Length: 416
Image 1 (cartoon, rainbow, N blue to C red):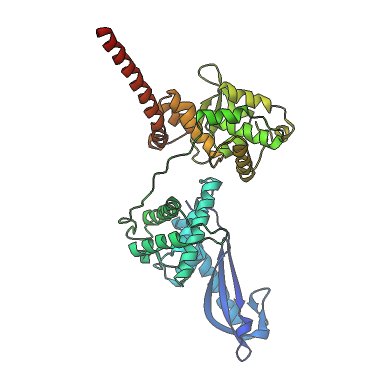
Image 2: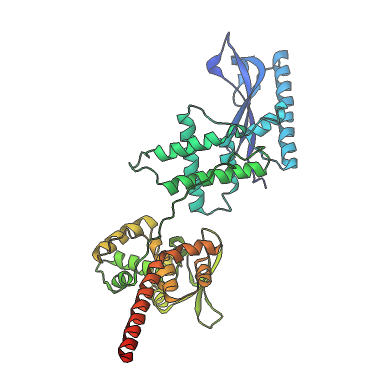
């Protein structure tokens, strides 16, 4: 569906290119801030042009003929815009220009596609996801600049283009730090480009999908989480600094609910309801996927909610917990890790991983239940955590092996 557009038309002259005191007249179509200029193949004496009105001055025959022509152009351009609206097709400055000039077969470009996708999806994608698409857009522009081209038609997208883009991402060193992208980060940018190209294919902007032969290669990384003893060390640690205690409480709350940073920050009293078991549950929609999540409150999570009920900051925000930026929160978690002797890169997202592994799966909660608690659309996503706890399976089997060996040894002694 075409989102609401802002469409304007103006007429102007390029005074800097006056020749014999005459200048060329142009039409400028603007849609949502994007422009397209049209040469009208007409000239006017510079002194006889009214820049404010976009018209020729005076009643001379030349001025009257030019103004009449401008009226005709205006009517035709507005008709072109109305036709595109009725046809429910993609509307931009270039598409209106193409319809006016009778060049509707003009191809769409890659950057036009990216702009269209990011505009259309601005309401359906979360802020974090949309921000990632803007980052991918930035790298596409950098890649095109390196190839010394401003844009490329979608029909020119080839398997070679994708391979070259991947190579560019792997070798690119961002200006704000010296670390190159890891494999999975590169694949995420490729994946986002693929989704946009697939959109173009579905809308018949291109005849074939250049990604058909392209196979992404993800490296399966083991999700970092806290062991039971590490989590216990944070729970039992008391801090004299208030900000560290707040961050500690938020982190522990996430460890016992599985909610992400943004989902914890937006919680309010309306998210607490009585569940099917008569106990209190948290009911919310995940910001990232919009999937509904229902989490029965464990005692430690309930205690933390009660601790901040009536807090001066929660009264102002009407949330369950005082708000703090994700950047500051993760920075303070590094301090907490050092003070608790935890040699891991502690981030808030590790709390969600800890809930999936140490709190639930390791304690026998079925993976189907854990998947629902985490708000995963596919159980395959949850199975990543199941692989993580294979170490616990190994420990349990070793304990079982020891018990069986003890029994065998005892039976042998009794037999003798």
